[in-house]
Length: 174
Length: 125
Image (cartoon, rainbow over all chains, first blue to last red; front, top):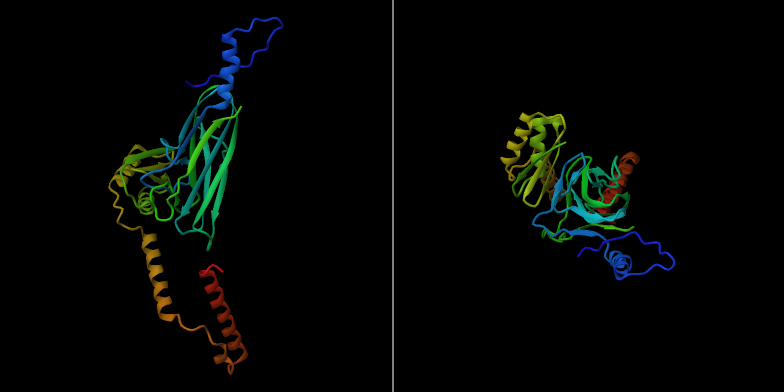
């Protein structure tokens, strides 16, 4: 059963403490704190992801779309993955779409630049806080774009020596 | 943004991107691919005909056909490999230029230096 958060009760002097109150305010709230709303996806796919999009788009609108039913408050979102380029000088940008609106906006949460003569593969990762989400269901989608060229996100698809498994996760933290 | 999803495996994304941009120009924002599907990202102003055209191009895409940029890159790589094979020998011997004019000797020194820099770059030094 999904733990339920109940705003902690302010106890009154002489109040009769019932089993129902203890269960709601101690047991259930502690269970909620022990196992807060969390969703995560670790890629282990049949093909890597690629894009040439110069506008932010979903990396995978099905797999990398997390859903949390929150009690209301802040949500921590994280991602780690390894990206490759198509042999040109280019920039890869990452952002997260929360309920249809990008978390950072503009050029996203972060970018990584691939320069002439530099590495062809780089690790990109972030931990970001989305503050003040109301209670209810929320969706988090990983998004990316490039300025030019073609980017690859290695997705555990068996690519030789690049069979790595990126992870995208979200957890309510308050 | 309009996104057209095509369920299909194995695409040459750079070539598909090139084909779409050649056909639809600025209406194309890019292409993405993941397991078993391709997404064509189109600008807000595209017409229904352009959306349909993008769908047809993506569905009929031949992953074995290279884009002009990919063909050019392969040609450049082959040319470089041939030059490495044919021209690489002992490093430039500056002693052979000792009797030349100061200008020519200096040029030889510069070329020898560039040779060392290139070797260092290739070997990650």
